[in-house]
Image (tube, rainbow, N blue to C red; front, side, top):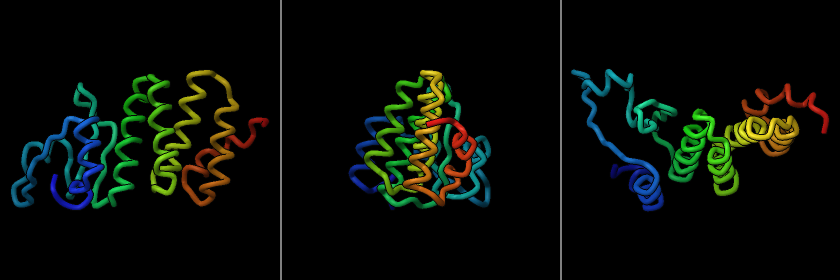
Amino acid sequence: MNAGPYSDEKVQTFIEEEYVPLKSQCFWKERTELMKQFDIAWTPTFLMQDFGGRVHRKLVGYIPADDFLAHLKCGKGMVFFEKERHEEATKWFRKVIEEHPNAGVAPEAVFFLGVAQYKKTHEASALRRAYDTLTEKYPQSEWTRRAQPYSAIPK
């Protein structure tokens, strides 16, 4: 991992601290077993897996360093979210929102922060807060449109 965002010192440090990196070469004439196993169709491809090998996020193509860090943090949040560990998920989604508010993945983090908080507390107001934040900060986002049903929840 020595090109593009992978060469960024902050990215390298974060990956070393929070992930177990594995680098594999891709050969387009004769696809490797890993390429076949994980349906790698283009590079770079970055997979975020849990220790059981389940892929929770797949990133394809060049992503600028700050956006890449945001994706890595959101990926950590999604692993915890999908394992019903909402406290940890909330922590990682907040990091994306606070540390990378302009990253492309920030609206997704807002959406899942609201859902994780709702699943933890069963208070629908968390979903409404997510919707309100999305409409205020990211009005054109797909995640704002996905959260639109939450607008019916009373403030």
